[in-house]
Image 1 (cartoon, rainbow, N blue to C red):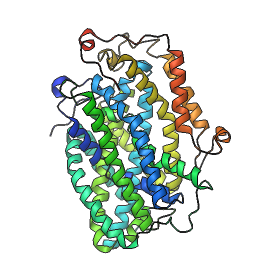
Image 2: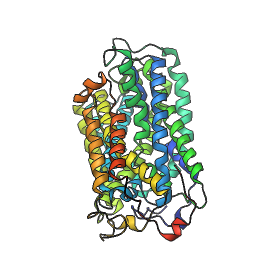
Image 3: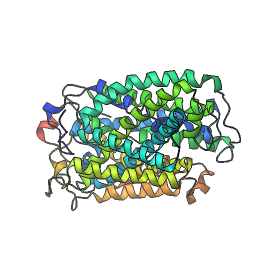
Image 4: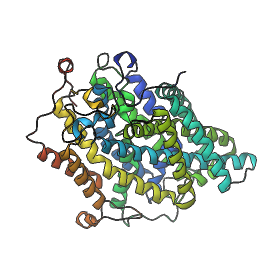
Length: 475
């Protein structure tokens, strides 16, 4: 299989051969990994039992999908990734905001996947073979997983799609076997000695809904376009793509996260997940657990790393996608080492997802408002001006930046950061919300409202005549 040569340039119609089923496969297969499973552990680690954990995860996931899935339609129309597509609202240089947000999201989730996957693999090998469970063993395992991940990400979309199709079947079977493996120890009560993280039930439940449920779909706000840009809008309707995105996210996120909640309660995993998960596994399940940790981590981190390469390629147009991918992998691996040896996993995960959700949500809201206003009609050539190191075009605005959109995002992100609560930081606006983290809602509403007001008298940029003749698409 040849290495993919496409970066963030527009995918030609003849290469857009994927379909909605491929989209479901990649969203399902790539998420069946410990990097997503571990989010199901967060609600029990916050002090919630079975049903509060399940309702928090399901509620947050459904809300996140309703907000995130329509973004898949943007790249369906532009033929390039979402960060570059956002140039229609932010300007061909201003779309760097989306590239940076996407880079941070992918970086964090790649590091988390390698971190948890490596810890579980070392723990399983320790019980199977007597391998010392030391910092050196974990460091070697992180490096091996990162190297395997780079191979998949460098070869690109086609290889990752094939891997996802295999993982979507294999990982479902491994997790189904895991349900029986942990059944004797399963309990519906929260882990012992685990009090409500925020002192009472409802604030803790809302935190779990955002940190464990909502964060899953929001992680894809810049990633969905990496897959839908390979789907042809001439052969597949927007309605099919939208429903396929929603279904893929729903099944692909709920299966692993609910498995994470189930195993966390069975293993009494309070302050840590990887160690208790391995210790509670019956000996006969250690090999399937090892396979799941290895294969799932490579599949998920490979897709995240692929997206990181695209975002870095968009930030530095002179770099090739392959070079950008290798650099991104090196940075992600460095984060794994720092996180594993210096940070508490629960605090690091919670802080990361809440902060990135607050920053990324207003960008996504502004991009969706622009999509609705232009009715899905974009000038694909004008979106590539910055990548070609040129100037001009309908999305040039002022020096390549749309000041109104960039300012709106900055205001929304600022409000979100002032309203967030994490183990490391609490925003001053929490006093107005009785200590409840409403950063996601406040950042999105503020960013969208400011953008709507500032651009209320601005007409959307005209699309090329041939694209304007196509069937209009509504979100």
